[in-house]
Image 1: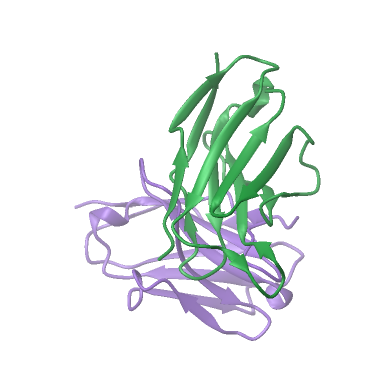
Image 2: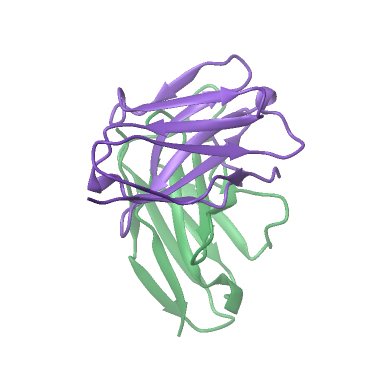
Amino acid sequence: QVHLVQSGAEMKKPGASVRVSCKAPGYTFSSSAIHWVRQAPGQRLEWMGWFNGVNGNTKYSQKFQGRVTITRDTSANTADMELSSLRSADTAVYYCARSSDFPIFDSWGQGTVVTVSS
Amino acid sequence: DIVMTQSPDSLAVSLGERATINCKSSQSVLSISNNKNYLAWYQQKPGQPPKLLIYWASTRQSGVPDRFSGSESGTDFTLTISSLQAEDVAVYFCQQYYTTPLTFGPGTKVNIK
C-alpha cells in the first residue's frame, strides 16, 4: 500500500479553477496510475479520470471532458488535478487513488474538500 | 455507462451476526479473456477515504479480515460480513472496473442493531 498525501482544502468562487495535488512521499508514479474520484455531499463516488504513470497517457470521464486536466509534476513528484469553470455542484471531497495493472484502488489520499460558493 | 445498484440502502445487524450486501451491474462486467468479474468492494468510515476490501468479485485484499467475503452470480454480487464487529460500522460500495467511466454503487450503510 502506498501513502498518498493531498493538498489542503480550497474555497473557490463560481467560474474559477481549482488545482489539487497528490503526493506519495518516497514513491514515484512511474509504475502505476493515479485516479481522481470525487464525492459530493449525499452522492456516490464519481470517477473523474486517470493518469497512467507508465506511458504518460490520461483518460477522462466524458462528464468532465474539457473541464478536468490531470498532470504529473515530475520535479515535485505529484499528480495534480485541475478542474475549471467551477460551479456549486462541484462542491465535494476530491480523492486521488492509486492503481497498478487494473483500475482497482488499493491506496487513497486523505481527501481534499473543495467548496464552490459565491 | 454501467450503472451499479445496491441493496439495501442500510441495514442494522447484531454484533456477531451476518451482514449481507447486494450489488448489481446494469450489464456484464465479466471478461471473456480471463473469466473474471471486474468488481471491487470498498469500506468507508466517516471522515476517511474508502478502503479496498475485495477485488475480482471475491479476492480479499491483503490484510482484510477473513470475515469479509465476496461472491458473484451473473451480474449480481454479494459482500458478506460473516460475524459483524463494532469496527465494521461503515458504508460499503461496489465498483466496476470493466470499462470507463469507472462507476460505483450508491453505498450501503451498516450499523449495529
